[in-house]
Image (cartoon, rainbow, N blue to C red; front, top):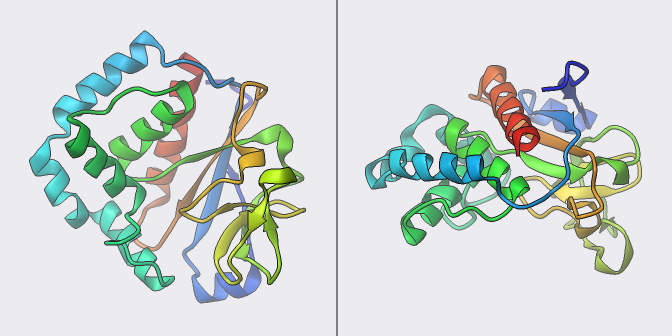
Length: 216
C-alpha cells in the first residue's frame, strides 16, 4: 500500500449529523485501474467461498456488524428484508451461485471487503469528483451524476455528494458518470460507519479493498 495513502473522513450535513450522530463516511484513494480478475484474486474468492458456507450465511444477520447495518436500514426507512444490506446480498448470491464467482478487479475487491468484514465498500472514479465527498439528503429536483445517464435523486434520500451534485445513493446505485471505467487511473473507495460498527472495522474494510486492488 502506498505510504502516501491515508483515510479521509467526509463531511456530514449538519441536520443529518444531529439526527444520526454516529453516521460517518470514510474514504481512501488508491492508484489502480479496473481490469480482469487476477489469478491470486480468483484463488482468494475460491477459498472464501469454501469458508462462507450455508450455515454462516443463515446466521449472518445475527452477527454484530451485519445487525448494525440492518438496524440502520430500518432507521432511515429502508426494509432490509426487501432491499438487502450489502453483506446479506453477497451471502444470498453465494448460496444461489454456489460460490463467489470472479467478475473484475474492482467488484472482486469490493466483494472481498464486505464478506471478510461485514462492512460495505464502494468505488468512485476519483478524477470525476469535485472536492471532498460527504453525506446529505437529496434536494428536490436534483440529478445524480452527469451527462445522458444522469437520473433523479429521490428527495430526502441520503446521498453521497461532492461539491457539485450527488454521486451515489447511500447503500444504492453509483452515478454512471462516476463508476470506475477503463479510463480510470485513480479510484476513491468509500465506506459508511453506522451506530454499532466500530471505526476499526470500517478502516479494515477500506485497507483490505485497497490492497486487493493494488495487488490485482
